[in-house]
Amino acid sequence: MATEVERLTAGCERLALLAIGPWSSFVLYHHVIEDRLVQVVAQGSPFPDDEARGQPDGWNCRYDYTACEAAFARLNRREQRADWVDIPQGASTCGAAEPGRDPAGQRVYAFTPNAEMALAFSAVSHPLPNRLGQLMLHNPEAVNQTSLWDDLTALYLLRPDVFGRVSDSSGRSGGHLEPCVSARQIRAILVASSAGPSSNLGR
Image 1 (cartoon, rainbow, N blue to C red):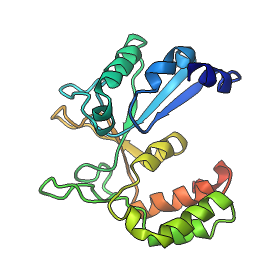
Image 2: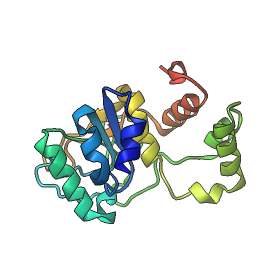
Image 3: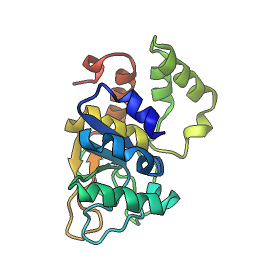
Image 4: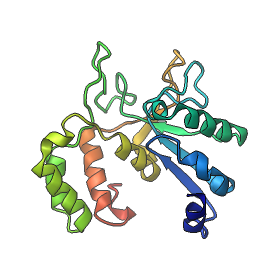
């Protein structure tokens, strides 16, 4: 794996790492990219690398706790921290995005792909988003109980301006990033970004 990563990134002087799953593979290839790594963006919260009372128990870390520990030990030695991105975990960070938890603290599926998004994808001329839209329309139940967790994380690399950093006094949710715009706006930006170059990102 390390050899392949090295080959694929041979012409890159600066790299951003997008982590939307367990850290298992990162610990196998980190040594071939770490000197060029300028940004790490990861899905979820809490973030284990510098949250005062947090532990690396975010959803992705639970799949491979040993790899998660090793990854952040490596990043910490280089004084590199991750930007963690999540759907809102309570009242909206910026007062514009619906929360992902109700007042009782129960998760609700905010930022969910819906029929409007599926129709928009299916109208894109590029074959990949077009096919995605058709699949979503064919089997809408497949996305009913999900959110745009990974999509938001990737979008942060392209549109950091639509996110805000959460910082509260508890030390439990401080420091991760959440969207500052509505789910409808996020869905529109994601569809636009699938249609072509960065000029389509809805700025």
